[in-house]
Length: 322
Image 1 (cartoon, rainbow, N blue to C red):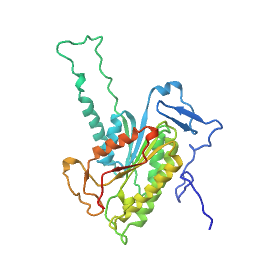
Image 2 (image 1 turned 135 degrees about the horizontal axis):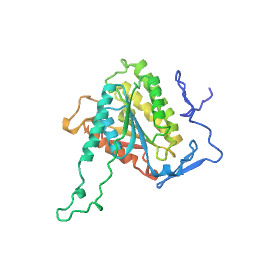
Image 3 (image 1 turned 180 degrees about the vertical axis):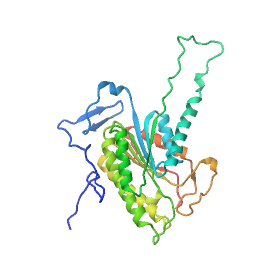
Image 4 (image 1 turned 90 degrees about the horizontal axis):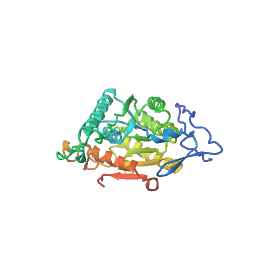
């Protein structure tokens, strides 16, 4: 039987029909956008006006937002001058709470003066020489509801996000997970597995044109040791995590020279340290270490700031029980 080859951009699972309006054949003389750190080959874009290079407007999308990893990752990127942040999750009420949490954290951080901002009582600067840092405007945060078990809802939301962001996206985090027990004979194959697999494949498919239009594009997908060592009591989650890992490896092979694509292994129970240390409530299959989402977000930022020559394709955060 002949072997059929396909790529990420050619993969079209029924019944979703992907659009290719942004994916045009490269021109005879492809353009190259230069940055101070590295250069990226951008065959799908037109050159920006010279003035556009003076202002960095960074935009991000987080699918699978939540009160732990999602909020903390959005906060740290907002604090580092990301101007547009799109959050996508199932619950609109939760998304509103998460947006307020992010904006409140920014207000708290700007209210704290750095140590060198305090003036001496012996010498006060004159009004002409005194200067204060220009306050950073809050990011624009928009919310979309979609369910990763319903690929159509996710694709429609991603299209709307792409239109809102003007066809450009710097940073994409895929962080959805339904952490619940499921045995091999009781798994929810129709809803969770089929829908989740289609969404996992289609989401990067539709975002690649947006990412290839920027100078520092990144895709990070959270996973865990379940993708490598699946326990019998988390069959559904293990299958989805294995599929996500396979997708990322394929993306790295095909687009790894242009996009920073990384798997982030979150091995343990995610919870805030003030909630207490300990085993958590998931039992066998998860590590006993409690992982603080603020620490995970800091790791995300460090991964994003990697120089191109030192891009990491996999990062292991936490340990698990063998």
